[in-house]
Image 1 (cartoon, rainbow, N blue to C red):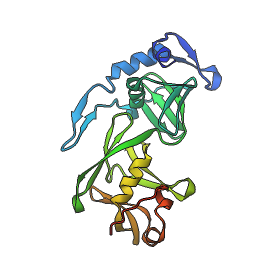
Image 2: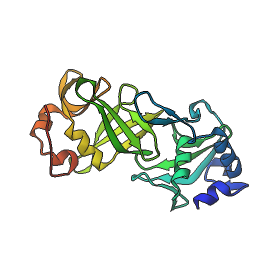
Image 3: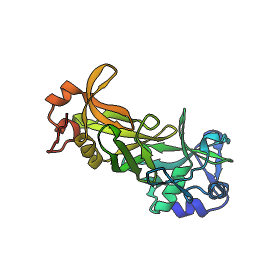
Image 4: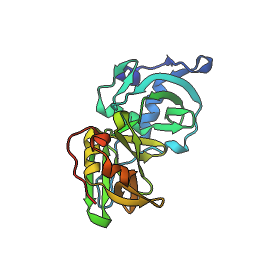
Length: 237
């Protein structure tokens, strides 16, 4: 199904207003012309970064919604079928954007809407680049992007089901990556008490910014299962 989506030429019906139709051939050609996902540049002192197309600068006409969905676990679906080729998912991810009215795939010539169940990306790996006051946290997403947490790429923590927490890292634009369960444990293990908006909080530091998980008193009283639904906890102060 995914291969057909890229390879098929002509008009493909979508559910946009006014019976809009998406020209798959033009979409594929425009995607390839950006060179998205192919070139990389070496981040200073860090992993290589992909060169990305300037999607924020493109303002093509909206062609409607297509039957594409990003599930909570990061799997991309088209027509109800998982897209099995990682390279194809990476290519789509480079033209993903979040507008005020939802998520879209955008090229210089067309824009189509897709559904995202939670966050569009997953953070699947974390590197603690330095320790102490100079600590820097770098995250790898499921589509191959490296992100260094800091003032331009904040981490936010939301409450999850069963009183757990869900950490998100801002990747680019308005696109966030949800940290996997394993990374939640790693973040809690390196957590410390700090100050945020005049209050004592339990959180993590990266590139000089402190990102609170919870009120310090609440964190000190709580069973760690309330944070990560696991049995072990290493508390640092």
